[in-house]
Length: 266
Image 1: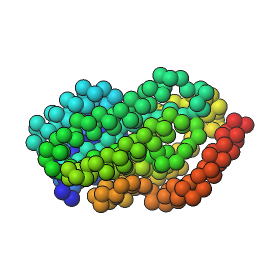
Image 2: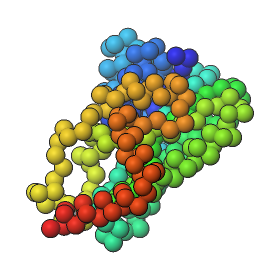
Image 3: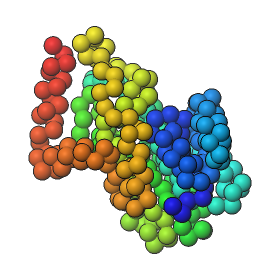
């Protein structure tokens, strides 16, 4: 692995935390950028106790000045920046009719604008260096439609479109750009995601814990895809089946979701 310095946004938990720990275990100096500074410090402590180098930085990715300051400070400290993982994200579950505009704006401010801000401020640094890698974390929901999460899916589709378009431009400057699209994983985002449609809060419809793999379970295939500079990285690998199915039969997935929604509303 050629990375020396990396920034991971949303690095305090879930996928971001596992990426931080993986990188630090490989000798990479890791910036754990997260709105939850206390949790980021916990990750920093784990890294330092294991003999690695990590630093927690409180960062709200929806605020452009905070992202700029975090990236600037990191570059000034290390004089290089090899990898940026734009991972921070949020979600809101429920039907479109129950979602207000404030919810839409919040989703896009973090899931898309947070990615854009990080990319915008690191790009000239990497151009000047002549190397670097930007990994934008989308989702399987960014590759195919998903009912009851229109705002989340729309924001993650935006990330994929932006990432693949930029990838075409960035190669000439020695910059790699990748879309990491995790499938269904058991991460802390589920514990803090609000349901705006009331029927989703019923006892019958409550999410079953430990139903899916954890981020730790799939960190190696995710990082392997990043290291190999894959344009789109899906993990768990078997979840590629859903994407292939959607590409072959694009009308099928919305029909399936329609049936799921009818069942949940009974």
